[in-house]
Structure formats: structure tokens, C-alpha cells
Image (cartoon, rainbow, N blue to C red; front, side):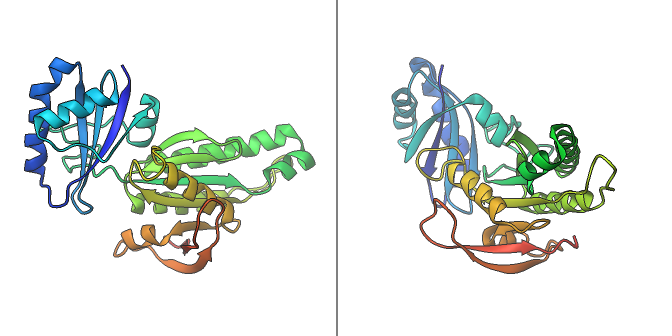
Length: 275
């Protein structure tokens, strides 16, 4: 059956409210062939995201309507692999709420998306040959994968000359980016493998933001920030910098960036690579 993710705007909702609503869903869902698997609660923003398997979106909504009347503002069909890639498999508590991996803290569903990009990869391949370019890419991949795993992130996919990764914690995403840049800078050039630089960009957001897409706006913004970053630097949104306040990380104002696909300027921060 198709898998859906919906979003509810419920200002002031508490974990107990959501527990009762989920129990009500479970009492009704069987007669419609629906399975509400789990939900993410972002108390700060007053939003709830539900993951549900259902014959169609209408059946999923019917369960909500009959169980408690809290129908979703939007609901989208999603690829199961996308859910695992962005949100992770994750455990749930006895009330059906998603938990942060390895702990008992409730998962808000907000994720930090990070892109890396090897600077001048096409020129390097043309100048040095495909074999050397592949060695550089392998070195990059090993560095990025190790740093992402060390800081609790997940690699979502390769992007040709870079990697896309996702983190629950913006702090860990920034620390991972710093670790990556430090490791790349420490690579010792060899006869057949020159030194190289990478760019990194990161943005944070909710599962469904715009155009009925799972992390669509966040992914696009992170990719644009990566392309906009200076070689050897990490560029993030002001929102990520704000979420890292008091965590021993330092940021510099990088000004407003005019990025393709975004109507207005995006205020950005450059990470001081001293973390």
C-alpha cells in the first residue's frame, strides 16, 4: 500500500494530547485498512507529522476525522526509502511518538541537510585523468562518511562529485562539516593524487515545507548554499547558526546570498573552522 506523510498545525498540543489522538486513530483505522505507524511532534512550532500506510489519502484522512477530528493541513504520498533516508527508521515510544535514535527524547522531525562538493572536479578529471579523479573522489567519500557517522548523521546519496547527508542535530552537522574540512586539508599530496578542496552547505527544515515535497525546500537550499560557499569553507543558514548558540561553535556573517530558485535573499553564516 502507499505510504503517506501528513502535517498538522496544532498550537499548544502536548505529548499527552497526541498520545490520546494516536490511540483514537488505532481504534478506528482497522475498518479502513489504514495503519498509522508513528508521528513526530514539534512542540515549539505546534506541528505534528504522521506516517501512515493507507489505500489512499482519503482513507487516511477519514480515520483522523472519525477518531478525533484533527485533520491534516496537507498530506503527500512518499517513497519509503525517502523516509528512511531523511527521517531514519527510528524507534517509537508506547504512545507511537518517534524517538531520537539512541535515546528517549521525542523526535521533532526537523532535519539538517548537508551537501559536500569537490571544487573543480571536472577540471581535475580533465587535467589529471579519470583514474586520479576517482582516487580523489574515494578519498573524499571516506572522509565524509567517517565524519557523518561519527556525528550521528546518515549519508543519503552521492551527487556525482559530492555527498548529501542528513542530521537530527544542527550542532552535529556543523561539527561534522568542520571535521571534514580539517581532514581534507590534512590530506598529503602524492605524485598521482594532488591536494583538493571541497565546499559544504547546510540548511535545516521540517519534513514537508513547500510544493508537497519531503524536505524539498531544505534540500534545495542546502545544495544552493554548497554551490555558493567558498572553497574550503562551510556555509549555513542563519537558522542553523541560531540553533548552535551556546554549543562552542562560532560563525561569521557571510551576508545575503541571492540563490537560484529563491525569491528573496538568504542570510548566511560562514562557520569558523576552529571547532
